[in-house]
Length: 191
Length: 215
Length: 176
Image 1 (cartoon, rainbow over the protein chains, first blue to last red):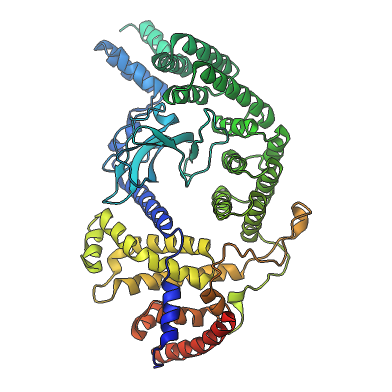
Image 2 (image 1 turned 180 degrees about the horizontal axis):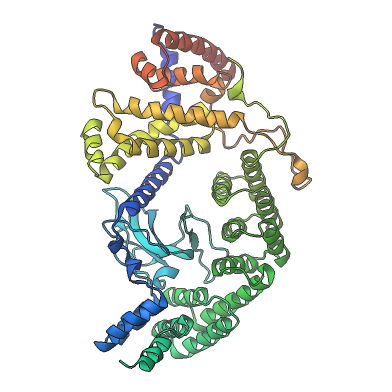
């Protein structure tokens, strides 16, 4: 075996120098793993855990609504008909319904005490969808069920600083002088 | 219950969900905006809805404005412009365009992409969804790639048959180049070249890279 | 907590345990792939694929072997597939694009990892480069490298020696 010398150490040192953006790359890898977990969990989830299980075809809905009427729950029927998106806290099992996918938002905010995501899906309410900090680091995440389609959003740091998602496409127009990010949820992918 | 009553109730419940949707949209706007502003925005939203344009993006813009504490006039102006953008998007993409496509196209048009470019994009991918190409195009423009260059890049990639994930990867790579200090136009050309190298067959002979010299 | 303990937890369904493994090993995976492939961005894709596969086949990891070596075996295979794809690439002619864009023949060098080390190893073929990086870069033992690459220890020693001679010569050239 060739004896080690100073040159070996020099090469080793050059090789082991940290790569720029490694942290961000690692976070992207973790985000992708979580996405895979969600997809796998969804495939094995029981149907009755699906939040869309209550969505039915019109005639069936009409029949059920008659029952609801009979017990005076007309308001409940109106809610079902309007299909307002639910911003529930992250579910223990990520569920993929026919028209919805649970998306994991990931954001790195060193020094933040509170991070939320505001977007089309929650009426741009800066408090409605908080992220939770991962372990002891600077990374925050949230899992949000989103309907298929295009969603514009931004992160809100400590209730006052609005910022786009550095890893997402930018929305084309800064409507109120501030940039947003966009994300697309499709039938078989989240992009 | 009498059959007729059942049918009347069923019909009532089957009233187009748009009417119900409208009600809930109006309610959300009134809850968050001042009465005058809400009124002006609702008028624009209803007019757009009557033309068959998607109203959710308009409501979203208004609510965003409310959350960002924008002025009432700014909110109304943004919603009005966006409604105009949606109408122009429908002209460019045709009546079969889906809501998400119209929203994405509206953004691109408002960012300065000409209607011609959108029409060319539609020809390049007549059947599939244009949402991702439009988003990628808008992202380039937002990051400083000149509109012509951005449009040509996305058009060339789409014509080459690049699928959506490839377009998004191309976007990421171009973004990284810009972050490293490359001029946006050059970055987009290089990004396109990389994508084309991975997309589809051609008759050209390959160039062997440095990793591929013989053993 | 050792890697093996984290694997046990991860197999039992603890997502955080696998993420901790990723945190520990991602830097090494990325630097290996980046130096081997010479492309930072491609390297990231390959490492992601590696981690996904590792996650899916975690139950097959056997405690008596080092986790990193097990992970690197998957990584090396993914890198080999990636280089295979690179070999099959073809260039399009410039005429389909704007006439001003010069496409054929030039290298996009700003995404390449252009350090002295990568330039010194770029003429090595993939097998020599693997051996060199695993031995001199990662500092692994020959029997581990043998398990990772599927080559015999004598063959690996020969490759490392030849690679080392070549890289050292290039290194001196690049210094001047």
